[in-house]
Image (cartoon, rainbow, N blue to C red; front, top):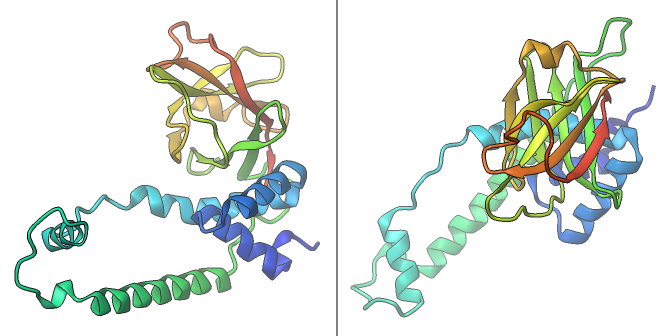
Amino acid sequence: MNTTFDNDKDNLRYAEYVLGLLDADARAAVAREIADQPEAEAAVAVWQAWLAPLAIEVAAVDPPQHAWEGICRRLGLAEPPRPSLWDSLALWRWIGVGASALAACLLVLTFNRTPQVPPAAHSPAVLMVSTLAGNDGVAAWTATMDVDRRELLVVPASPKPTAAGHDTELWLIPAGGTPISVGTFPAQDAKRFTLPKAVLDRLGPTAALAVSVEPTGGSPTGQPTGPVIAKGSIRAA
């Protein structure tokens, strides 16, 4: 069976979408494809499973002092001391060119290493995906569920910011059942959840995911109290 991964151009676009390398128009176009095409949604979910954890696990690094001093001098915020090698504009340009080339090489290496899409089988799928879209049909988040690892990864597509004093909360909606809270998460950032057994047992194509706006810290009642701003069905990747 042909999949989205057979199309090298689309495959690279989906990788760039997950890495945040597309401009606004291209990103919006991919978001529409995710909402309309199950193959695109599955391809993006696989790239998210590969790449998004890398961004989550990278620790923040403070820039060196000489970098801040150089910025202040260029903005005229400080008296410039004696020029040094690190203040050379040409040097930083070459460093920038080298960093860009390295990033491009890493992307090519990642792209050429074909991700392992879970094969079709008679047993329940290990990897599940869901596109959480608003009432306008635009994807706000995508969710990837890894049953073996008991993990759910939410990655922003084009979410709207929440008002101060509120959180976005993710819910599992079992067929014919009451919503189960998965947890709160920052609307603009990726978030990994460890799934309890009560959630794992309800995952599947008859269930759905939804996002509501709740007070800071989550719903005080254990059920959605604010507006539901996105929802989506769950299916095998």
